[in-house]
Structures are given as structure tokens and as C-alpha cells.
Image (cartoon, rainbow, N blue to C red):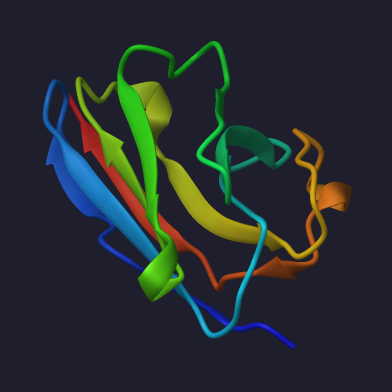
Length: 120
């Protein structure tokens, strides 16, 4: 069983930046971020594999950067040029087996979520 603990959410003005962190209690192959806005389905944001390969949703490419520290079992999401439509609860996800995916079903463990609110 792997536990994920997120931090770093908050309130920011449009155009601003936030950095999310997620620490895992055990080793994982892929770690990622999903988000869910009110009334919408959970959607893929970004993922990074143990090997360093990264993936992004088109909506965040060029604005968000995912990274990880394997020694600390921690993943980061640097979010720049934030827009109001980025407002959502952001969830950290982890997959133990090799591989990745943009579907939530591909991930084994989930964090509790952290709120990101972007104001105009």
C-alpha cells in the first residue's frame, strides 16, 4: 500500500504560479496529476515515469512542468501562467507497474486532493 500526500494548493491570481508537491510512502513507477473541476469529470493533467519520460494534456503544455525526485519518492507540478479554467481540485496519482496512462483507471493509488483556485 502506497500513501500519497499532496501539498501546495491555494488561491492565486490569473497569470500567477503555484507549485504542487506529492510525496509517496513507497516506490512507484509513474506518478501523475489529475484534476476535477465542479460539475466536471476528473481529467488527466500530467505524468512522469521513473525513467523521466513526461506527458502533458494539451491544455497545460507550455505552462505546466512535472518533475520528480526519485530519492524522495516525490513528484512536483510547477504551474505557470495560470488561468481561471485551471481552477480545480488536483489529485496526485501513482502507478506501481511500468507504463503510464491518461485514464484514471491506470493508476493504483490516489492522494486526497488539493484545491487550486485561480481568480481573475
